[in-house]
Image (tube, rainbow, N blue to C red):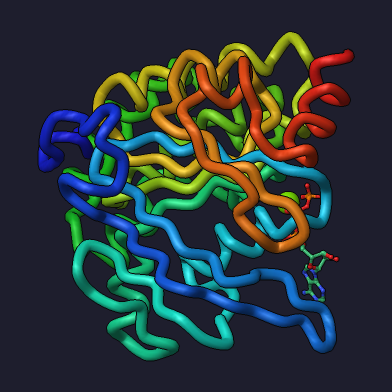
Length: 261
Ligand SMILES: Nc1ncnc2c1ncn2[C@@H]1O[C@H](COP(=O)(O)OP(=O)(O)OP(=O)(O)O)[C@@H](O)[C@H]1O
Ligand SMILES: [Mg+2]
């Protein structure tokens, strides 16, 4: 299991005890648009951070920057003590330490479910097919889709596909997993099956950064909520503090809108 290497979750001591992802004064522009403004925060090993905020506030860009799918203009991002290089083999290695799950499941359409979870471990981690398939089946079991292993992604429901996407990212043994609105493309009845898997990961001590508007998940699983607005971290707090007593007017306004429906 990918969590074996991790120590017990560091609950409530966010960012201090054992820093895993250190985001240090990061800025990014898209042309004239300043999309990340002096982002400065640390995710501790075992910590679960939920990122929320209005559309266009920079949540996806931040996730993509952590995985170097986007470059940054200034500042540094460090994963487990190693600053992210901008390119090259070293980047590929570090990127493999950061799992990523997107809103659209992004599975390989012409590969079976099992192949989807074994491909990268065989190519990148150099596992034998036998080892990769054994571990792949364990992970599919864990997310509850082992019985779908020989199907193609299109033959699965959206919720099942997203659970395969989670298993695929776990198969690389990442140190941290980033999930960008993993349930927002799903039909309502499938959201919970994916959230349940995510809560399970959180309980197992996986380090997670989750962009989501699922407040139930944030309350249940998050150690910390980061509220972004206009490219800035506007507020950071425990879920209890944030939901019961948001401090900034923008957070208050945002919460009143999303909690209204
Ligand atoms: N590749 C790009 N080129 C130019 N502008 C971009 C690009 N990607 C994102 N942006 C802009 O950067 C800003 C931040 O976008 P981002 O996708 O990070 O927001 P978000 O908080 O994830 O929003 P949403 O909740 O809608 O997913 C937006 O104004 C967006 O239009
Ligand atoms: Mg987004």
